[in-house]
Length: 457
Image 1 (cartoon, rainbow, N blue to C red):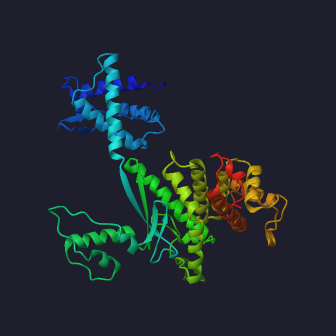
Image 2: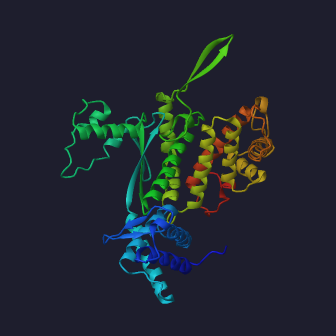
Image 3: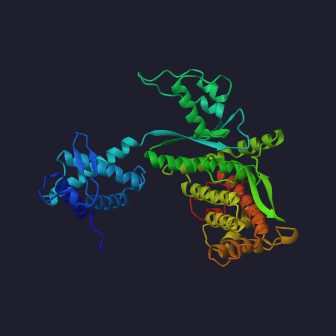
C-alpha cells in the first residue's frame, strides 16, 4: 500500500471529523463498534474522533514528525501525536479547517503546523529533573557540579527545593525538611505527613540526588534526555573509581540491580537447607574518598564536555563524540551490572565497538593500542590468560561478543568469567583514557576520532 501525502492524509482526517461532528444522518456511534473518543476544545465543544479519524491522525502525525527540521524543538512521536490531536480539535471546532479545494487544504495545513509549533514551543521551557541515586558516599556532606548538573547528598538537595502552596492549601509544617532528615519530630498535619511519605517513596534508601536542568525540550523528551545525562555522569564517576564492582553498587534508583540480600533453597539428604548471600552497597573509607574526589576534580572538565555535548548538541564543539563516548560507557556499565557472564561479555565488547565506530576487529585493535600505548603484538595480560593485544581483542570481540550475539554459544553452562574479567579491565582502561584525552581534544567531531585520538601530553 502506497503512503499518502500530508495533504491527502489531512483530507481523509477532515472528512472523518466532518462525518462525526457535522450532525450527519449517516453517522451513529452505535454502528462504529467502538467507544466514543473526543477532545474538549478551548471553546467548550466536544470534537469526536472515529477509529478511522484516529488512524488518519496517527499517519499524519508520523508524516509531520518525520519532516520536522533538525533544529526544531525535540519531541517524541507519541507526545507529538497527542498535541496534534488537540490542536486539530481546537482548529476544527473554531472553523479553521476546510478541505473544499486545494487552496483551502493548504491553508488548513498551515494552520495546523503553526498551532502545533506554538504548542510545542510553549511546552518547551526550563525543567529541572531530579534522579535519586545510590552512591559509594563520595557526595557525603558535599556536592559535585559537572557543568549545569549537580550530584548532591539528600541534605544538599533539600536546600534546592521548595513546595508550592496555594491559598486554599493546608499550611506545611516548616520543619518538614528536618523531619525528612530525621533531625526533627514527624509533623502531625495531614498535608505534611502525605508530603513526607511521597518524598520518602521517591528517594527510597538512596543517599544522593542528581540534579539536571534542561532547556528547550518538550517535557517527556526533556525527562528522557535528563536521565541519559544523569546516568552518564554517575557511570563516569563509577569509571573513575577504577573498580568494576562500583557499577553494581552505584546507580540510579530505578536501575535493575542484584538484590541486596538473597536466600537459596535446596534439599540435601532429605532435609531443607538454606544459604544466604549479602550484597551490601560499598561505602568508601577516607583514603578511597580522597582518591575519588581527586579523580573527579582532575577530570571534571572532560565530563563537563560530554555533558555539554549531550545537552547542547547545536552549540557544543563535539556533540557526536560526546554521544559516542556516553553510549559506549552505557554499554560497559550495563555489562558490569549484568549477572550473566556471557551476556556481560557481549555488552562490554559492544562498548568497544561503539567507541571505535568500526564494526571490525582491526579498528578496535588500533584504538586499544592507541589508548593503552602498546603494540598489537605486545603481551597485555598475564597468568592463565596471557595474551597479546591482538589476541585479547580477538577473544573479547570475535570469540566473545560476536559469537554470543550470533547464537554460536548456546551452552549456558560454559564459563565466561575469565573472559569477562579481562574484557572489563581492558574496556574500563580504554574508556577512562578516552575520556581524559577527549577533554583536551580539539580535532574534528568525526565518529571514528577515538581510534586515533592523540595523547593528552
